[in-house]
Length: 196
Image (cartoon, rainbow, N blue to C red; front, side, top):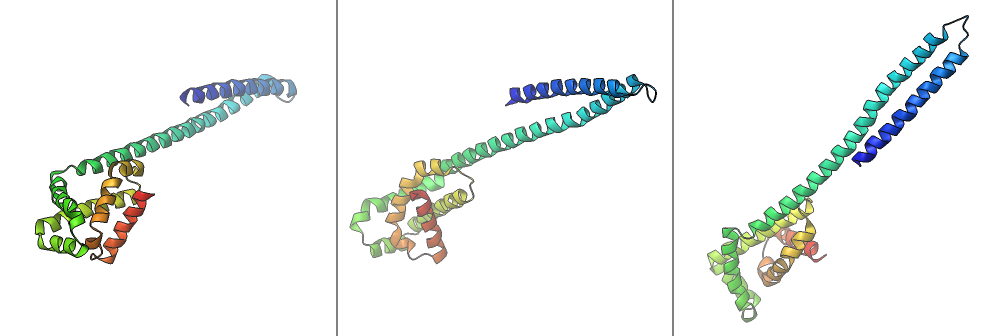
C-alpha cells in the first residue's frame, strides 16, 4: 500500500509536469506578440499551474494519511479485542473464581443423586456454595456483556468456555429458575450466544 502511494504520486507529478509544459508551450504559441510578451504569459501559466500542484499534493497526501490512520485504528481495535478476551479468560483462574469452582464441583459429583429441589435446598443451606454459584454466574454475565458490546472475540470465548458454561447452566437450571426474570433472561442470552 505504501509503495503504491509513492508510485501513483510520482506518475501524477510526472504527468502534471508534462501538462504544465504543454500548457506553457500552447500559451507561448497562442499569445499575440503585439498584445503581450509570449514568454511572460507562459511563465504566468507555469506558476499558476504549479500553485495548483501545491494544492493537489497536500490533499493527495492527506487522503493517504487518512487511509493509513483508519487502518491503524482498525488494527488497534482488533488488538484491544484480543487483549480484552485474554484478560477476561485470565479472570477464570483468579483465586476467587477458582475457589468458587471447587464448591460447584462438589455438586457436579452429586448431580445425578440430587433432585432439583435437593439441589436448590443445598445451595440455599450452604452459604459458601450459594456465594460461589452467584460469583460464577456474575462472571458469566460479564462474558455476555463483553460479547454483546463487541469487546471480546466471541469465537475464542466460545472455544475456551462454552462447554464449561453450558455444563454449569444445565447443572444449576433448577436454581436459576428461582432467580429474577432479568437474570434468567440474561443467562438465556449467553446460552444462545455460546450455542450459535
